Structure formats: structure tokens, C-alpha cells
Length: 137
Image (tube, rainbow, N blue to C red; front, side):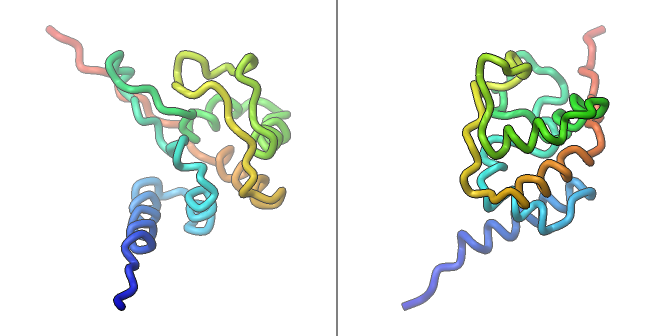
């Protein structure tokens, strides 16, 4: 019987594609985010850079947006590690209106060390470059 390797091959392809597009993440961190389920709800770069009102909102914020929002917050690292490990409170979310998800569930697939590694990587990302929409003449 032939062994099917498509899912693994597809995952490796997607990881390499993400690495090529971002240029600022190491393969281990992207694999950790992918295998932990983080990339199901989050993207690395914002999906809606043109602020299209008809676009479907992502489930969770893009990692570049998280890095931008917390870049001057001295307590961001501890806050985000706690959110990754224990989940977030939908009533305290400051992402309302920019994402479709209500709250982040706890990340049971990540140990403390991996949660800390992911947060360090997320906070190190360069801010997204917003593309202004073309205005009608």
C-alpha cells in the first residue's frame, strides 16, 4: 500500500512559502506557530492592508499588527505570554471591529518555553506597511 504524504508535503510547502514572503522569521518559529494551530486564526502580515469595507475580517489580529500595537508597551511581553497560555477575555479586547473572533482560547498545545519563544518572535516583527487605496478621480 502506498503511503500518502500530501498533508506533510503541503505543510512544508506552506511553511517555505511563508518564510519566503516574510523574510524575518526563522523556520523553527514558523513551524512552531503552524503546528500549534496559531496560523489557523492569525496571519503574519495583515490580510486587509487596503481597509476594504467588503473584506472578511480575520479571526485574530495579524502578528505584525500585534507587534505595532505593543511596540511601546513595557508590559507587553508578560501580557501576551499570559494570553497565549491562558486565552483572552472577550470583554477586554481592544481588537473589536478589526477581527471577527471574540476571544483567544488557551493554547494547550504550547509549553511555557514555546509560548515565550512565539511572543518574542511576534514582538520582533517589523510593522506592516499600509497600502493606501487608489482614490477615484
